[in-house]
Image (tube, rainbow over all chains, first blue to last red; front, side, top):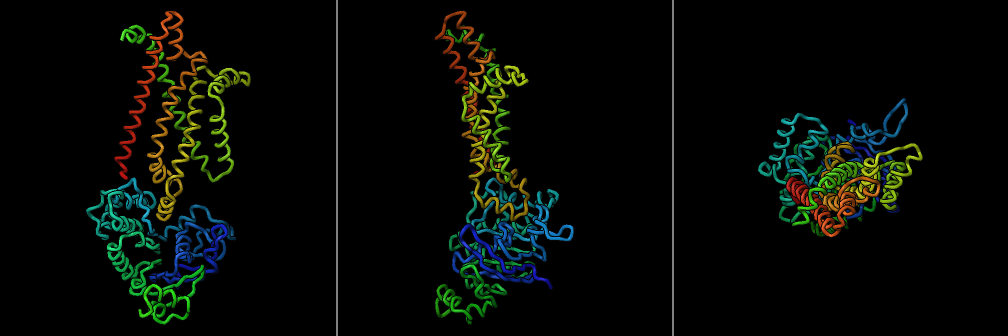
Length: 258
Length: 216
């Protein structure tokens, strides 16, 4: 089976700063992958490329067998038009560290907006699906609340409901608990765990929660300085890392005895 | 009170013209400001530059001289505008040039994350602009836009110099007949002030409405 995510020799720099320096990664459909590594190692950039918010400087990036940035036309590869880009982009969804809810819309309308305008669902159907997703994240009673009146944890739940409602094949989670108060983290992680255990979506999770990464992912990828240092089963990464850098990172976070 | 009784009624016609010109120019200004502000953020350099030239030319030259150009000079190029058309055009484009900067500033102030979220939901660029960016930018635009509208009202007195009998011009006529400068201009000031007050109130109202629909 073809991988749903395929990266070959991907490089990305912002100005002078080389953030990704040759990434090879293949993720089969349905897998949950946690991406760990020190800050500034390029984890978030990887997700931005997968979400097609930024484009690679070099290398191959394919979602479900298609490159978002190039398309075949008259037998050769041409730069993609917006239509092709959106056709590929529609297979991916993302939840952000800072939620990025639309402040001028209620929770319900945050979820409904793209259902109405992108998927072009009829209004009743869009509302039904949005309400269903909101109750799935425990926010049925907050449908009419505006983001300003929600707690961080509630905002992130709305953001998750909003992304899930689009039913993407691939979901990306970019440090989605980092901006939350500690007591709210557990609930969000439990929600993630529930999603990944269904195995219906491919999930790529950038996280600092090692225990979570260990317990709920099929695979852990360790990033450092713009390259993938180690890639394997959670047990292997956390308990028998092959690389010194992985060991030091894991030890620093979990403590040597973990 | 006596001044208002004596000179209020004969000035009312002029006041109506002033309000009419201001409203017409305001509509043009809003269109020009939105167009100019968005054009300054365009992907295409030609569009950005054209908008920049428009903004800088209208901001950087005297409004009065612009009026003279549109009314007295353009006929030499075969373009004949009525005094009213020239007045509305210049006032509208002038205010629009300042407004374009307001629009641009407000749009730039919408956080990057909003564009990311819209893109992650696969919204088109146009949908992102109309549904996500402009509604948020609108709130930031209103207070400076209110200021500009009051400026526009006051600048409208300039069109008296291209023969339009608006409030100020009517006052001049009345003064040359009666020589009662103090009373006449007291009434004129009061009229301008009252209209400005209405503009302020309208913008406050709009701001309150927008805030209510988007708290925080």
